[in-house]
Image (cartoon, rainbow, N blue to C red; front, top):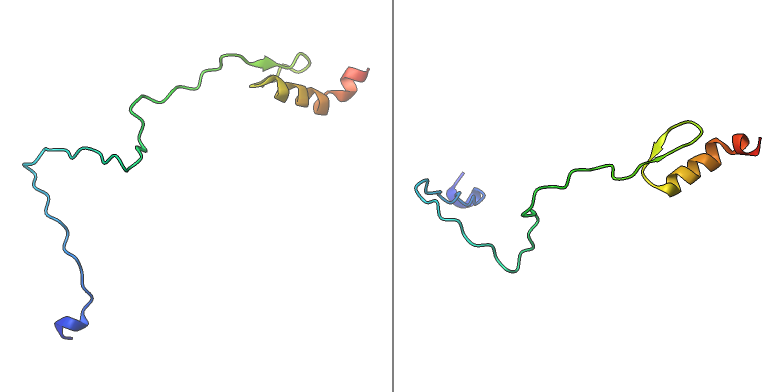
Length: 76
């Protein structure tokens, strides 16, 4: 094969290990990495089912659970 038949491969840019300079971020690029530590998930308030004791994150989830799982218990 001759050289024109081969696909063109762009050489990788050489990194200078002595260079520690960091380029400033472009104002056109949205920062995908936050500058703060991730917030830990904290159970501020849990809603406990008074019938079976199962915990839920929201009152709506608890109400739905009671309506589905304990409908017969509430009627009795």
